Amino acid sequence: MTALFALATSLLWGLADFGGGLLTRRTPALTVVVVSQTIAVAVLGAVVLATGAWHEAGPQLWFAVAAGAVGPVAMLSFYKALALGPMGVVSPLGSLGVAVPVGVGLVLGERPGLLQFAGIAVAVVGILMAGGPEFRGAPVQRQAIVLTLLAAFGFGAVMALIAESSTTVTGLFLALFVQRVTNVAVGGTALYVSVKRGGAALPEGGRAVVVAALPALAFVGLADVAANGTYAVAAQAGPVTVAAVLASLYPVITALAARGVLKERLRGVQAAGAGIALVGTLLLATG
Image (cartoon, rainbow, N blue to C red; front, side):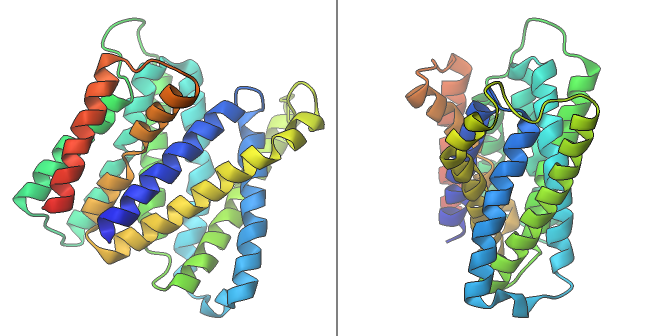
């Protein structure tokens, strides 16, 4: 069950990242974050009301609040790092966030078997390669490296925090709702500050562009929510060290989506990385 839900997380995060990447080509990143998460809040709010999940409110929800506060900061740091580039360095480094939940699992006493340790190592190498690392070319700005590592830590922290936010299914609905409300509050504040400083809140074409993109924005927001949910289930059902690595295979999904939809050609290192990540997945699933 751990492997199944963790791989579902990778699929959902990979598709959400692909959709978000397409949307930010025309719409400011902050607007994409705020609108997509607002839609998620509305849907989750309805689920919480329908299931009576608010009855499970407790101290654990502070983990969800923390995850909601860290998430937008990590995402915006990542977008900024991508803008500074080169993407072939930034993207793979962003995947290093998997070290946070894996480290938490080891600190809490998890001890994967030898085959699983091998699977973790192989999968992480495949994940980094799938991002298409650049070994030559323009020098990388120090700011880009710092922002990328901040984003990676943030992504990993969200994984670790959301896994601790609930122990039941209905409680998870409430935790995800709280997380998204915090996302909107933090992202909305950042958007307000950006506009005050002269930044754009709407793309060229105005609100009509945002309205036309609502189905895509809804998909991005809800896929991200679902990914957080499946990851929480995976982390609770089995070793966090295994769940975190399998859930972090999403760069492979994003690269394959770009290949299938945008007809982008995979570089040799990306194709090799996808294959290596698959081997690591098999080792983890059978270990």
